[in-house]
Structures are given as C-alpha cells and as structure tokens.
Image 1: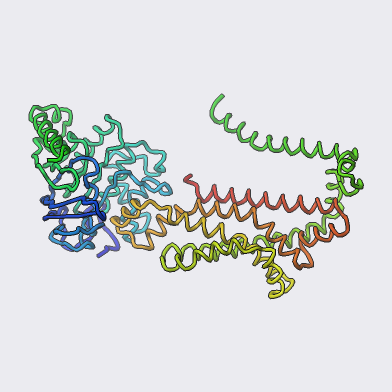
Image 2: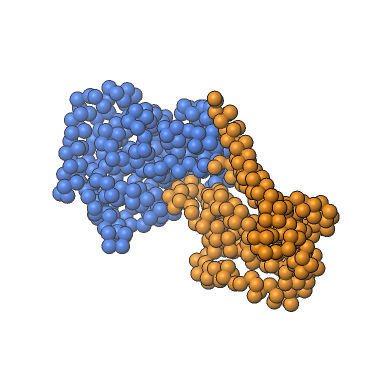
Length: 274
Length: 261
C-alpha cells in the first residue's frame, strides 16, 4: 500500500490502488452514541467526488464525531459509512486526511518537517520529503518559513502549514474540522481565500466542519445544516459562487446574502430543536 | 537598554545573587565560629565547631584523600543513575504499551519507593559484599521511582488528538511512538533525572555507611568517630558540590536535547 519513493514533486495521491484525486462519500442512516449520549441518529449525507460539503450545526451536535466516522477513526453504532465505495474502517482511514481543530503542529519539528510528516511516515528520506514539501511551500505562500519552529509562526501561518500537512498526505478526501476557528476575522478571511485557491489548484473531496455560515457558503458547493443532538441533516443549501476568486465580491453579492439568511434561519430552527 | 543587555544582566544576577547569599552566610559562620561564640552557645569544645577557614584548610590538606573518596562516590552515583535510567525507561515503555504490564507492575514501582533504604542496604551488603555493587543498587533503587513515573507520565501526556492525526498521516505504532510520544516525554524524563540527581548522593552515602572501605560516606563515618569535624564538613561540601554540578549538567543536557522549549 505504501509507495517507497515518489518521483514527481507534485502531490498525486499515493495510497489505494486506482485512487483518483477525489472519492465520493456516502453515509446512510448513521447512528452513533457515546454511552447514553446519542450524538448522531438517522444521518444521511452524500458528497460527490471532488465535491466540497460544509457541515454547520449547533455546537456539540456531533460534527467532529461525524468527521472521525468518515475518516475511519470511529465506527458507527448502526448505518453505513462508505468512502470511495469502501466501508471498512482501515480502508476509510487510507483514503481520508484529517485536519483537527487545533493545528497540532509538533513543536520539535520545523514547519517543513511538520508538513512532510506523512511522507516521512511512508518511509521517504528526509531530504526527499523536504524537497517535495518545499515545492508546496513555494506555491502556497510559505516560502522562507521552511526552517521556522511552529512557535515562531503566526496563527494563520500555522494553519497553512497544518493544511499543507493534510494535503501532502495525498489522500483523496480531506476532513477539515473548524480549521480557522482560532483565527481573528481578518486572518480568517485571508485564509478562506487562500484555501479556496488551494482547492482550485488541488481539487479533492472535502468535508468542512465550521460554525461560520459565511465560511461554509464561500468555500463549499453545498452546506448541510445539522440538528441538535442526536444530529441529522435538516437542510441542504447550494452555495451561489463556491470558491470565487474575489471573496469580497462574492460574499457581498445579493444571492450570497440570501443564501446566508436562509442558512441562518435553518440553523436557528435546528438549534430550537425542530 | 536593549533586550540583549537586559537578558545579560538577568544572567549575571542569576549567579551573583546566590553567590552573595552564600558569601554572607559563610562570613557570618566564620565570625561566629572563630570568635568561639557558636561553641559557647552550644556548650561545646571549640574544635567541634570548625570555621569555614578551618574547613577550607582541611579540604586543602586532605585533598588527595578527599579526591580519591569523591571519585569512588561519584562512580557509585553515576552508575546507579545509569542503572535506574535503563531499567526505569524500559519499565515505563513496557507499561505504556501494555495495560497488562501497567496494572501488574505499577503497584510494585510505587512499592519500590516505600522500601526503607536503611533496612535494605545491610541486606544488599550481605548479598553482594563490600564492593561497589550494593552501593549502585541502593542509588538505583532511590532513582528508579522518579525516573519511571516521570517517563510514564510523559509518554501518556501525548494529546490523543495528535495521536489520531498521526494515524491519518500513515504513522505506524512505532512511528507514533518515535515521532510523537518520545519527544513529548523527554521534558518529563529530564525532570525525573533532575530529581534523581538530588536523591542519588544520599543513596550512595547510605550504601557506604552500611559497609564500605572507601568513598565519602565511609570517610564521613570515620571522621565522625575520630572527631575530625573540619574534614567531615569538607567531605560534605564536596558531596554538595558534586550534586550541584550533576544537576547543572542535567539542566544543560536538557536545554540541548529539548531545544524546542
């Protein structure tokens, strides 16, 4: 399963044989509980290959649990979770890269070694792994920060490195758990634009958990609104202009405003417990 | 004043302050002892209360004897800590990986710390003779607990989220251990080592008191019997200096190894 070497410096996904750069995700009637606490119940979700779907919902409604289920880090109590048609946890894990809420950069590694972790874990030599990650540092506005220790980086920089680390794993599915929640408003807007650009250049199947409706509508093709615990999908909205180059214009557009209002209404209903 | 100057002053003061404190204490002691006030206060003969100057003189006059004995004790301390490190880390890693080992061995690890060294040391001498072995064992026994517990805590201090993240980045169990658990545990290990270093000289002293023909502990016992108080204090001063130096070395090593803190 694990390729020993990689000749190209691009990040063509390695792992499962016959993988494309995106694989569809399909959840059917998924239920999950932590002991007595039912987190998910009767949840259906479909993400097409190369689709970007946002998940918004009341806090504590099980969004992170849902990502862990998709990634094969957890098993559902009942129902089925399939990634690229595979339902086994190990097969899902092989297809999904996970970006946790906190950046979780390892403070004993430099920025580039953090970003290249997946390559090192796959057995690539340090120099080769650094070269591969270095090409992406150039492309994604991190040139010059390769040797910096994580605590020397700003919040936005850290999130970028964390995202590159997820991207470099070369997996067809990216599961992003509130990647920009810890950033200030201006940096967050910048990072959304940056992520939109990154996804235009490196299309993947993406599930993005966020509590920011605007962020979801700007970055995703579709936004699923989850109910309070036990969560299920109560509304799905289509975003008017996913990942538009000019973010400021896109989010001030009238159609975008209408979609945002609609999403907020659905979210309010979900919070009241429909 | 720029940043660098401030830190340089901070650096100097870190040494100057304790040095001043020490000099003041020693000065007061010198005055009290040489004037006979201290001996009068306790109702003792003057020679039983040596002044710092007399201790320094004893230190100089007996330098080769003291150096010889200090080397013996230092070796016991270093080898004892080394043993504790090897066994302690091995125990901690085994307990970290196996719940079975953790449940069965952890009570024993705690029990090892409750063993009264005074009771065990004589038995060790009966078993292993008057050589270096029982001393190393006593030191190792004293240091085993802090090193094991610190390492185990360090290994389990790893963020479970980071562990999950590593799994999605293709990491094997071994890679999670090497790239995540070990670096997380290193600062804890050094804390354990520093605590051990403080206790180790006491362990070595105990080991020597029970039965030895050399070492600072052996010499202290003899000086006590012969009322060679000045030389006794000289030996104690050397033991303290040794402990301080080892602690400093450990702190230095920590700063080099755990450079990201």
